[in-house]
Image (cartoon, rainbow, N blue to C red; front, side, top):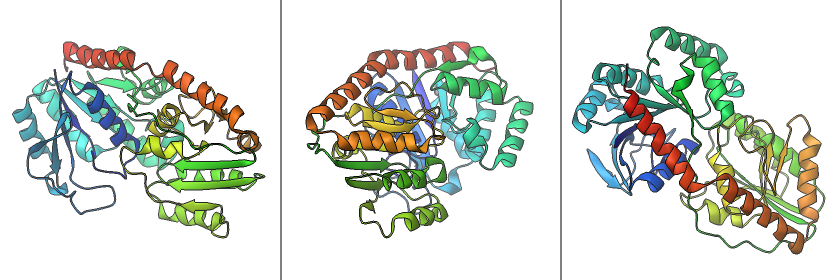
Length: 376
């Protein structure tokens, strides 16, 4: 089965966050069972310089064939040429609001009778729709009236996202398939010893208001003990970043450390005692998945991710800021013996939650169902 993926970016892009990570995991785990080709932009987010070492046309990268296009060639004519050349069994699209890419692709798919699997990637949650709400609402109304979603299959990464898709797009419920994203297969990383009264906190995420970094900084500053917070991630909202910087510029315990290189998330998480991530909304969160697989306890916002049942870590309501502080302080006060039990609980939860073989089979079945159903 040949899957042709159109996505805003692919490796070595670092500024797009979870969608690129999720696609890389998809290729790594199913590239031996599916023929995967990817079309994406030839530069990173907020940059124009092309990635080094790429050439025209499709080229092998890992288990996929990848075509990097300049912005000038991201158009209907180029997409039509690629579809005719590649002759895929199924298209795999992401991002409801990337209209420049996905509107022409949906029209071409209908014309050429190519099945489509569409992954909204959390864009239809109420928290995300509240940002630039009027523009998004108008676009969704247009899409519902256009009929372009008719016959399309949608991937929901959780039951909550399935409800979001049905609520906002009004599509056939039988065409919304719940299949979680594929996590990264990470090598086991060795943790540093934990000292009682000390806590090494990490934040790994795009620096954007929806990730709630300012809230995280405030909670760390309330703690007693030898506490540090290292912040990693691309700066996506400069104004929000300046607000965050103002909160800790006089606090030597908190520092910005740049971006985590691709493939080094496990080793990075292992250097810290917990991952603080009070996000406003996530349809999956590869950062949380990578944190769990590394055995590092997360402290996350309840009701905003699919990980509310986390074991070893904490899911706390954003309406209870002191709950975050209390969870952090509890971890801070632990010694190595107590903390090793926490890490064990995190790893056990990750193994139970992320059953790789089952997730791979469900992903394969999703594409098979779309291909057998066709495109109307």
